[in-house]
Structures are given as structure tokens and as C-alpha cells.
Length: 251
Image 1 (cartoon, rainbow, N blue to C red):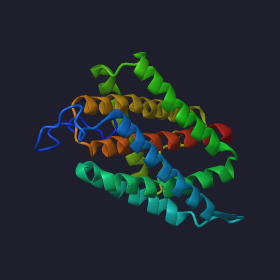
Image 2: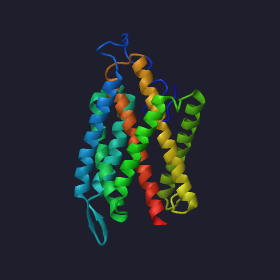
Image 3: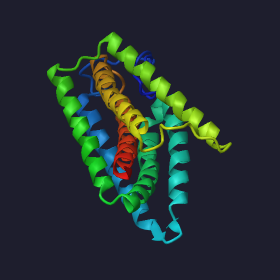
Image 4: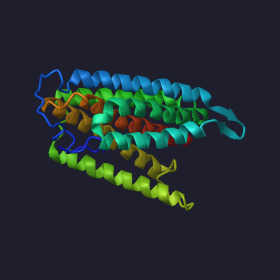
């Protein structure tokens, strides 16, 4: 089992508990339970995003008040994500905290994008959830199957994107920017389209991974962990849609 989402890796559902949890047990992971908890995380994320959005003010010199939510949310979200990945049993606590903190980041960055590109946030939200439901339908209907080669390809592409972003961030500290990919030219738009497609296809791997956990009778707390992993992918997809749309509108 592979997933491009680092929160949902191959060994996640293996040897999770000292005792055996069988499918149908009240203490076992269920699909409905995971869906409900995903809804809770999304609600928490939206609430804090709305709060952060309203704290950002815009002046002729630029946005004011966004930095604490932007950087605090990004760093806090990363820390909580790592804690959740390495301490899965803490997911019932850390997953909601991650959603709350990540909401601050999303609210701040969304307000900034919307200031420069009016209406872009609503477009990105519609595209994100439209993609989610379209791929969920395709997966459940069998139009898309998470075969081993499919998984391997998506994992490899996701790793490549991560390395590009990491290199871009490190070089940025020295005032160096990777040419073309962050610009609104053909190459930049093409790169963003590629990243959006890979982020979207990670949803298929997440669906497959969660379904596998349910089939194996994973412990109940894995519902929170599965919901957390899905939220991580949705946040990534939403941010990539913002980047793609901003490049298209800048042309």
C-alpha cells in the first residue's frame, strides 16, 4: 500500500494496536466515522480561516496583520502534522488542533490572494471541492483504480514536487529563485497544472488507503488520522489552485 500523502504511508495501518481489532467491532475504524470526522476538521478549519481573513487589513503599503496568522499557521500546522504522523494515537487531539491552526494560515493567505485577484478564493474553493467529489465518484464507480503502478507513479511525482519546492525555499534564503516555474508564463502555468493534477490524484490514494484501513479493522482513533490525512491533501490542492488561478489572471 502506497500513498503520496506522507501522513498516509505504507505501514500506517500495520501493527497499530497490541490487540486485534476486527471489522464490525465498535472500536474499529469505519468509513462513516472517518467521513464525519473529516467534516468536523473542515468546519474547524473554515471557522479559523474566516477569523484570520477578517484580521487582515490592506493599506497602500500592503497587507497588515497577515504575518502572524500566515507564519504561525504554517509553522504550527507543520509541527502538529509531524506530531500526528509520528504519534497516531494522539490524532483525536492533534488532528482538530491541526485543522484549527491550518485554518489561520489558509485565512491569511486567502485574504491576500483575494485582495490582488478579486473572486479567486471562491473559484479555488469550488475547484477544490469539485475535484474532491469528482474523484470520489470516479473512485467509487471504478473509473479510477489505485493499482500498484498508479500508486508508484503518484508517489514518485509527489516526491519530485516536494524536492522542487524544498530547493526553491532553500535558494530563496539566498535571494535565488528557480526561473520560470513561479512566473505566469507558459512554463509556470504548465508546472502549476502538473502540480494540481498530482495533488488531485493523491486524493485517490487517500480514498484507497482509508478504505483499506476500514477493511483491516484499524483502531477507532484511525478515523481521526484518516480524516487528518485527507485534510492535508485538500489544503495542498486548494493552495495549488490559488497559485494556478493567480498565474492565469496575471497574464
